[in-house]
Length: 473
Image (tube, rainbow, N blue to C red):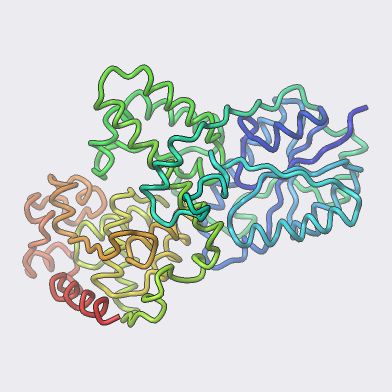
């Protein structure tokens, strides 16, 4: 009879190319998946309803995948350091496996779970899964973590990448008697997002689960990756992979993804195509750069990387912040992006940079307000990536050229020249000529006639003021 092993899923909601799950399967055929709905996370004030709904959808698909593999995924709803040892003891599990995470709370939580399991005499086994190179493997010549992306990429890209891990197959589930023991120990049916107190009814740009993630990648591979370098900055164009939520929740394996891009590059017929594929690979490296940064500098989660921003004199005008949140700043490209976020739970990456620059450099509002608002709205909200992007935009983070200020009109003219994106998300401006949309030179009377906001600030004045404060700091 096989020993029973539990595999604790977190941001790795798949059974294929899952390093920790594959290691558990090597130990025994009786591998049970577990997911713990952690109240410490669900009760935070930066949780998005769309993200919880997407996660629940991914868990539904993961339960199906476990059934197909011959086993099952158990759901718990309690603090992990209490729930997991209770379940493992009830099922007489020999070991609990899981994949490491970089977030400060995750590491603190995992230490508690490890201690609780070991007190019960249960073995703990951990692996790195969500990164192609774990923290500590990509270091400078002085054995220090990188704080600048470009040299990180140069080193990271040269290192050999691991092969995908084996998919879970021919596993065993619980007997009826064990199932009853699991239920007595806290195993429950998967609740809906609404059951958990989160309501999202607008659907998802990417459907939950492993299969949907791979279907999206195949669409991206067939239609857009060859032109990614040219098309990725145009928000009206379907030119990006939109796999950020799949990477956040781990419904797609990073090793498999890398392998597919390498195969594509190998068989590409032009330098332009290979350059586009590499540009997308660099986005995967950016993701890892921010993950490594958070691991080595956990204080990033609480404040700025650069000392000069620790006491920066932000204005923090609440009325301006509310206008920014609602997409009512009077700057069309900014407002279109914020409305896209509010309605879909997602925003194009170019627009994320535009609205972040506008909040910090035009409205002179603390980047942490925007960082939190994004986490309250994004279905792909990931602490490392979101924090890294906001600190980059605010000039408070790891960037060799820290003082960057985006002009909203210039950005719109360059990346939405026909105003397609703006028209999509600001219907009251849909009949206006592109020239006015992208320059923002809409007269006060026209704005009033179509019910569109007047500009709440003057970009030129505000950027001068920000530069003055930056210089004085």
